[in-house]
Length: 373
Ligand SMILES: Cc1cc2nc3c(=O)[nH]c(=O)nc-3n(C[C@H](O)[C@H](O)[C@H](O)COP(=O)(O)OP(=O)(O)OC[C@H]3O[C@@H](n4cnc5c(N)ncnc54)[C@H](O)[C@@H]3O)c2cc1C
Ligand code: SF4
Ligand code: SF4
Image (cartoon, rainbow, N blue to C red; front, top):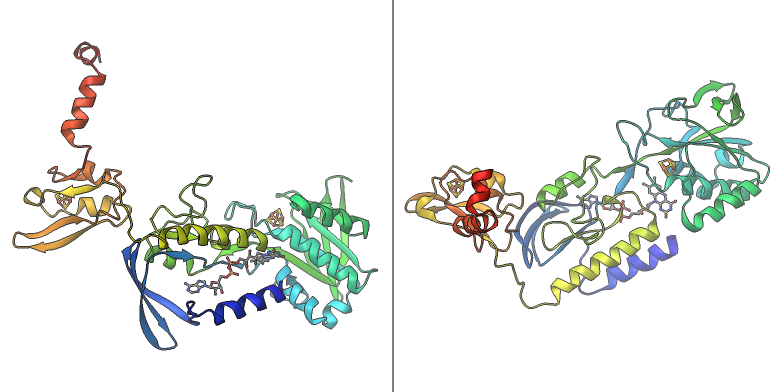
């Protein structure tokens, strides 16, 4: 992965049309598909970028556990921290005789009820690496379900063949970690043996949850795109538009969407890039004709339509008669929510006027049926 990244970083920096700003913060986004204007502060300088599309890839982070003595001993590590120790071949790793790994830490529970997807494979990967360093090392993985899906199942089998031991636990009988001598004692009921297991460990390694990047919520607000209850971004349609947001011209890739492996992130990034280029390759953006408009003389400036619109398509503008609502047609999705809220009927959806809808109801429900109802 490191060599792949190194090459990619080189390509990006060398490309004459790719500009990279580090330590950058977005402070404002205005506009819409084909015509965004974003203000970015980077290294003390504010720049205004005009762009046609945006790809949001704000990523995710590893949860900092509060469980299992994490933070009280430097021998209780997360899987990511263990990876760093393995790369650096530290004494902590080379000197360890026994390692206990605990899966699903901080997720698949009431407050974070999702699977972090990468941690089972990551644990197996790290177990293999530890066995390469010391084939005699005792490695026990305490898991709820081993989700080494697809071809990663092979690594799981190979780990078993190398004598990595797997012990299942239930959500309501979590393992208990206690300090014991220079190491730890881990106790957990084994549902297969029906017995309490007591394990010794020089290192305890926690498969900590993958959580959304803290800046995802801000990025979402700037581009008016939504997050799910767990804080990851919500795609427009899980099967039909998996890299699109509901807002036109904004796409997503990577773990900002949900936890996924690098290979899956890269595939999704290709998808997002393809969708983005589809828009950029056109001279003009074609919008739907079924959009809302306002009869200004009827508008009483109550703002109900502005609050109702999920796409930020309506705003006030000054007229000689005071503030009046105005619709930006390219942002309007024609869902008509604003129509239902308007107390005066000033805002209307083209091609779906009240007269047309009433006529359809009359046609669908002949007079005798209406009487019956
Ligand atoms: C703990 C953990 C272990 C993992 N283990 C594995 C593994 O073993 N194998 C595997 O294949 N995959 C693994 N993954 C998944 C893999 O890391 C991801 O698929 C991949 O890194 C996602 O890439 P990304 O670009 O979406 O996000 P990231 O790599 O998270 O990058 C997002 C970038 O956006 C930046 N950013 C965030 N917000 C803003 C903002 N507002 N403005 C500007 N920049 C911003 C961040 O600083 C970061 O540099 C793991 C993930 C985690 C969290
Ligand atoms: S990938 Fe494995 S360890 Fe991670 S949350 Fe899912 S089941 Fe638990
Ligand atoms: S809801 Fe109707 S009256 Fe109120 S601001 Fe919007 S268009 Fe004007």
